[in-house]
Amino acid sequence: MRILMSATLVLGLVACANANSLSDEDLQTARELRDAAMQGTGSFEIVEDLTTRVGPRMPGSDGDARGVAWAQEKLEGMGFDEVRLEPVTFPTWQRGKEEARIVGNFAQPLIVTTLGYAPPTPEGGLEADVVMFDDLAALQAASADEFGRAHPYAFGFAATLWG
Image 1 (cartoon, rainbow, N blue to C red):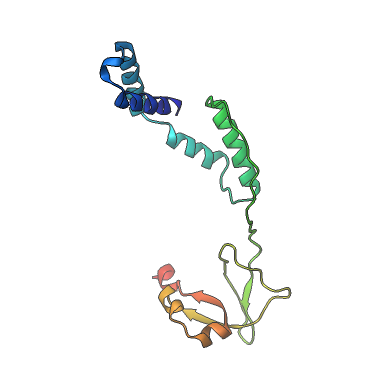
Image 2: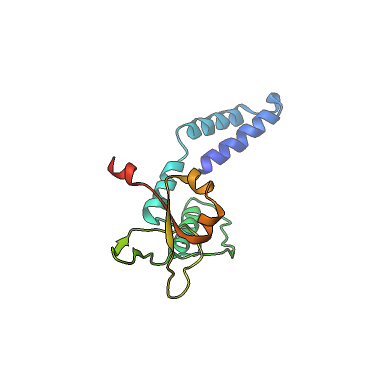
């Protein structure tokens, strides 16, 4: 990574400078840096290490804190001399436990999930009609009556899952 940054800087200077003002040694250094940068940057290995060792990093989560510590250690290990951690604030969202079921004469559990940053269900849950939409276009074309009475919204994936 440092080699790539150095090569970029040197090549940028070479492009801006008068060729007569550069020594043969400077030009040779620029060639060596260019050739080293062309061999690879190590970028994939860095991303692979982050995703393997740290995993998911949703803002505000333990994974986020592990990712910050990983980045500080990685950058310092690569020789960066001014690695600083800055305090940040942002909205956080924690996925709760999802549970839904059909009630009535033919009661049965449903498999559900929520969208990120969705508001919580009221204390004690809720009971409502369910309207099935075959796709997003059908949801977008829904009438006000369907929106007013239907919660939650269900998208049909049975054809995809079972042919």
